[in-house]
Image 1: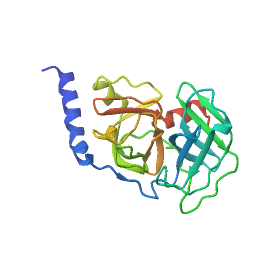
Image 2: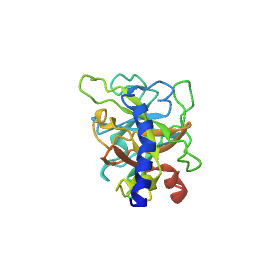
Image 3: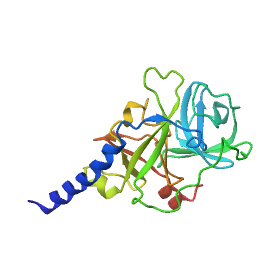
Image 4: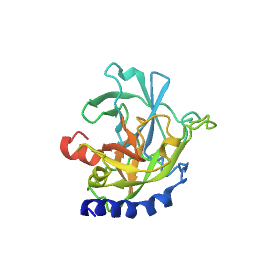
Length: 229
């Protein structure tokens, strides 16, 4: 038997038990998990997510180049899109990155940390040994009319593993696995955050899914190579 096939088979077998443990683990996000999660509203009708990475900066999904500062409002400290009574925040300006497909929003007034709102630090190192992370996103299934935020465990995978599954991951992206992820996502550019060991590791920006794998923007790679944060 081809040795390369044996290695691939062993890799898949090693991952499958962990995947089994995270199946059907979708649940409402807790207030602690949502501390840094930002609800971003564009054009008064389009909702997406981002993450507060400093008292005055939020990272989120890049849309068109035609939106203006006046088109964007942000809320923090909520666990639901529509049932959120927190005040709307405004931004001074935002920066877009076409290569990574993200925006960096600069708040007009810096945020003070509270028991409901707190910035999250970017991962200071690239570690795939701590594979099980938390994805914080929204739950867009029928019957969830208020769009509550949801959380689920995902497996962060080394690029080499993804490539062995015929998934060619670009340098600026990493991939994770959760077989039931698309059951809760309305689309794949939601700005959902991947949190590993208390650090923000990635964000879903114009992602794609295939064979239960989803690619996301690697914020560690972004910060290391651009210093834009």
